[in-house]
Image (cartoon, rainbow, N blue to C red):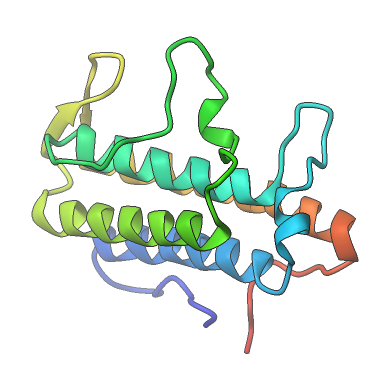
Amino acid sequence: MYRTVPGTGDEKTSLLAALDRHRDAILWKIDGVDDAGLRRPMTPSGTNLLGLVQHLAAVEYGWFCETFGRPTEPLPFDEDDENADLRVPEGTSTADVLAFYARARAAADAVIAEVGLEETGTAWGGDAVSMRWVLIHMLEETARHAGHVDILRELIDGATGDHNRG
């Protein structure tokens, strides 16, 4: 589905629509890629499509749920390995990662619905941040990685485009 940000309306609705637009683009860009392609390291650092989806799920849980005191499921972070969340462990299926992303999005959306834009929570580093700041940050984060996903997909099979217009 091709989403657009409404030309009018309240700030939270607009920010969430923009975030959803990029979330949907991530899923659209990986659709049709086989499991081997999703896991294939495409850069010297090992970046791959499925790892980026897992990372986005983890940071959605972290920034929305942890920041505002809501529960999360276990997250793939490791204090000794800053990129652990970008690597999908053996034995974790593509369906598992996609379901993790869906649950993270749903949990984040529940927090977004409950928390006002001016309300603050505590970020991972201990700073106070508003829901507005978190929405903007996650919009930036998701858009940045949607660009990565776009490039990786093109390298895999030549598919291009920024959003499903169907």
